Each structure stands twice: as C-alpha cells, then as structure tokens.
Image 1 (cartoon, rainbow, N blue to C red):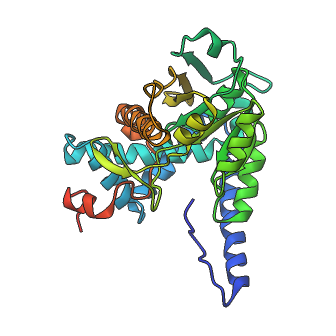
Image 2: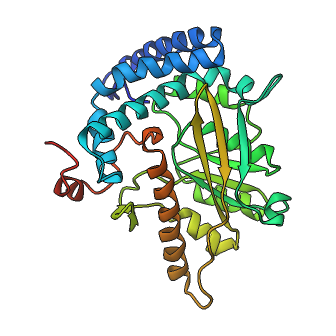
Length: 315
C-alpha cells in the first residue's frame, strides 16, 4: 500500500508514527465496514471504491505504462478498461482481508476451486517439496492457501508493508493460512533452509528487481529475480507455476501448472539458471497477458529508458 498520509521523517519521527496510526485507523474503519458485509458485497464495495479513486492516483501512470508494455496491440480505450480492472481487483482484494477465513472455507463453503493442470502423480501426492512461483493476479492469498490444502508444508515470501501498524493487521488476517511467512529482504537463505528441510517455498516473481539481470518478459527485457532458478539448481527441486484467477461473485480459481522443464544435461549452473528464468518469465508473461485487468503491478516493471522509448509513458 502507498504512504497515503505519511513519509519517513528522520528529524521528526513522531510525525511519521502519527501519520502511520492515522492511516491505519482509516484502513481499519474500511475493514470494519467490509467485515459487516457478505463476501460478495464486500468485494464489490472495494472494487467500486478503488475503481473510482485508483485511476486518479499517482500510481495510475505506472499501471497504464505497464499495461502498454504487456499488451502492445491493445488500443488506448482497452488499456483504460484494463487499468480500471486492475484497481477494481486491488480494491476487492483489500476489502476481502477480513473475510479470508470464511472465503477459504473455515467454517463454511470455500469460495475457490483448485485445478491441477500438473498431472504428475508425485506432485499430486504431495510427496516432495516444490518451488511455487506466481504473479500478482486475482487475490494472491488464495494461492498460498491452495498450496497448503494440496498437502504441501510451505513457506511464503512476504513483502512487509512500509506502515508497520498496517503490516501487523495484514499478518493477523493471513494467520488463517496454514503456512510460514518469510520476509522478502534476505529471503534466499531461509528459502534454501526450508527446501533442505523438505518444505516447499512460494514467491511472486513478476516485480522489478533493481540491479538484477535482464530476461525477456512479454517481448521486452526486464530485471527479474533469479532466486527460484538458483534454488532449483542448488537443490534439484522443481519449479511449479501457480495462477489465481478472480471469477464473478467473489469466487476464485487456483491453477497449478506442470513444473518447468529442467535445463539440458551438461548445462553449467549459470546456464541452467538462465534457462529456467527465461522459461519462468515466458510462463508468467502468458498468465499476465491472459488476465491483464487483474495484474496488480503499480510500480514500473521494465527499465525506464526502454519504456519511454516504447512510448509507454506519455511524459
């Protein structure tokens, strides 16, 4: 979430803390209201609110630019429709936090289905660990729950919010998911440890990695995390893509795809990492292109110079 009412202030840290508490209070009131509603209405309210104000925010220029890069053949009107869908999806996801337990079937009917496009008997039996990768699509929290429900003990890489007060609230909501969360910063060592202990790990791989290596994504080179490929080469654990789709009526479909193809025999570690990361970006890019209106990427994804050269930004 953005810093709506505060920015870091080293000279007056108390102003920062006050702003964080005010911001958290406003969001808590929003959650208090959505908690009173049925899941479908809560989701619809969040979609309406964010669909109204999101396009007016400073983040809109990044959303539009990313969509122009991801969907170069789409006309301006279609891009605007996709962008509004992005904000509506984000608003729904935030509004759904107080409802997660109920929506995941705790004490009632689950509002999502799991589709196993991965037909490997070993995978279906959940007999070993995997590296699960996904994009920020739909309501990403359901992919974590689906992995757990499929029988995999899993550690999920989690990016803490800048506002620690709100971050604690989010973690409280996420406690309904039977997994462990790993802080994104310096996550490589804990993920390696989890895999060596026979636990799976999950990571979202569709965000910019400043200073990272360039790999093709939707036809253009983008800095991309090589962590999943590195872990796979280091441990021999397969990489499995996962997608969460938002369906009408605050329902979802989580699809688990076949594992990525291993690198050719005789490949060096560097070659294997590149082979897997190129393949990963190809799969993730296709998933994004299938549902661009659900892709919650509100920060610049590709190198700035290339995006400006392609005309993704108007300025």
